[in-house]
Length: 88
Image (spheres, rainbow, N blue to C red):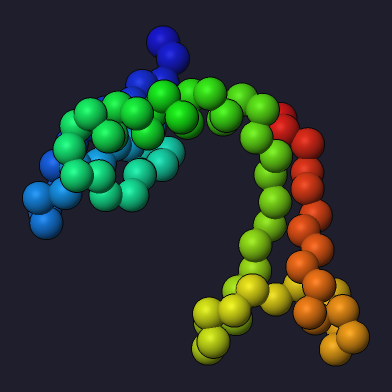
C-alpha cells in the first residue's frame, strides 16, 4: 500500500494535512490553511513537485535564526550557496 495524505484540524482549529507512510508513520505535516479546499490544493502542489524536488541542507544559527553555510568564510558569507543533492 502506498502512503496517503490526511486532512485534519489541529488543536488551534487550523486545517492542515499530513503525509503518512505505508505503515502509518507521519512523514510530514503542512502549514496551516484557512479551509479544506486550500489544504487539498496544497496536497496537489506537493504531489506535483515532490517526485522531482531537489534535496538541500539548510543550516541555521540557533541564536540568530540566520542560515549559515557549512564552509562559510567572511568574504563569501553574503553569497547564498546551496548544495543540491539529486532526488532519490
